[in-house]
Length: 296
Image (tube, rainbow, N blue to C red):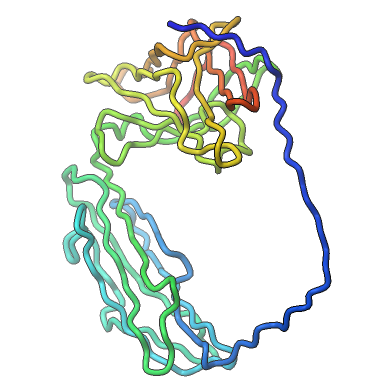
C-alpha cells in the first residue's frame, strides 16, 4: 500500500459574488400564442411492489387557461423495457388529458405489479403529443423506472444509521445508504459514507464489491466520486489508519446478520477509517477506524 500524508485542515470556502444593475432589457411578453403543455417532472421512480397509484402531473402553461385536450403515447426504450399489462398498467385508459381555465393540471395515473423474477430495473416512456392549439414544451417525455425488488443484493440495500468518530470533530451519527449498481449484481454504491449531509446531494458515492456469499463488501481506496468539487477537483476516498492515509489497497466491511440471517448492519472494522480528500483543495472529512452502521 502506498501511504500518503496530507495534513491539511479543511479549507474549503465558497465566495459569493453579488451584483446589482438596472435592467435595461424589455420584459418578455407571454400570451396564449406561446401556450404549451409539459410534464412537471421528467422522471419518476416506483418500486415494483408498490400498491400506490403513481400520479404523473402534466400542466398547461397558459395565461387565460385555454380549453384543450392532449393525447399521450406509451413507448418502450431499447433496453430494459417494462411491458404494459405485465409490469404496469396505465389507468388513464382514454389516453387523453383535458385542460381549461379551472383545470390547468391533469394527471396520468399508473399502477405497477411485481413479476416475481429478477429482471433488473425496467423503464417505459410517456410522450405527449401536439394539441390542436398548443404545442408540447421541451419536457414532453417522462421516463418511468420500476425498481426491481428481486435484486440478489436486496437484503443489504437501503438506509443505515452510522456511528463514527471524526478526526476533527469527535463522535457523530449520520445516515448513509447502500445502493445497487445498474449493471453489476456484485457492486454496491455507498451514498454519504462520510456523513456530511450538506454533501449528500452532490452524489459523492463510492463503490464496493460484495463477495459471493454476501458476508463482506470490499471497498477500494483511491477511487474518485463522479462528482467533482467546483467542476474540476476530484473528491477522493482514502483509507485512514489513525495517522496517515492510503490511496491504494482496500478495506473489507463485514455484513452483520442476526440468528435468522437478516442483515442487521455493517462493521467497517478497526484497521481503517475513511479519509475524503479534495485534490488540491484539502480535506473534506477524516473518520477514525471503528465505523459501524445499523440497518434502518
